[in-house]
Length: 343
Image (cartoon, rainbow, N blue to C red):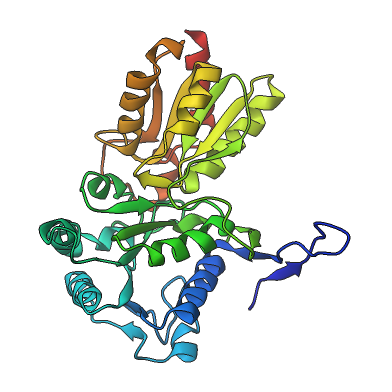
């Protein structure tokens, strides 16, 4: 595999720890897909240009070569057809993995996802399982045009019957795609496309956490910042700057958007008394809105300031030259941190 460095560490005098490799997030997803296909011949890939081309971002590169055209299918440019076909395959015992080429292209398949895929298990009183994964490259920071840099996760988090997850590191990407494929429920797998080329260590031994567990990405004591996907790295950047100014920020990486694992968030807010939620999506009726409301319901008397949100603006995603003004950065997170500490 290209762009991969391998290392082995000792866990004791006579035993080696699980092998660790360094790879970009996109390669980690590819490796996770490959392992899932090796483990289960019912795992099938569907999507536009995912076969011979290997996908626009090369996430499925070489899978068609190694597993054949019957398991890695290049589909027509029809997202509704892709999801509908996956539903039929799931009914026949397969575990289809669908790639939506860009976030803004998912809406032609919205009806199939929200009115069919999400509802069929409940409609059949649990007798029919829908082990379908929908991979969605999402978010900004790549200088693309309209419909190529959106953050539509809130639409699907609102829909009962769907699981939503979003890795922020290569290690999580490698393990969470496998966990999603093994799930008997439909899973929306949101991939922060701006982090596809970010390298990190991947442990090949065992996953560090379950698919729906939040993660404390950085320990702090003054303010809690919650983020997901690409915004986790921005929150960590803000925390590093704040440390130099004598402010200790604890960063929580959501990992799962539906259901949300609130335990680490609640524990952190009880410690810090301050919460800032950062996301690329607009603030209106968003994941951040839900977290703000839930935290204030559960730990109101621990809060020393209102929960603040840092987000994209409630306007359509702008042209590429303006994306830096639209997307939250470390400065905007730090400004919210300062406001929270002023109360």
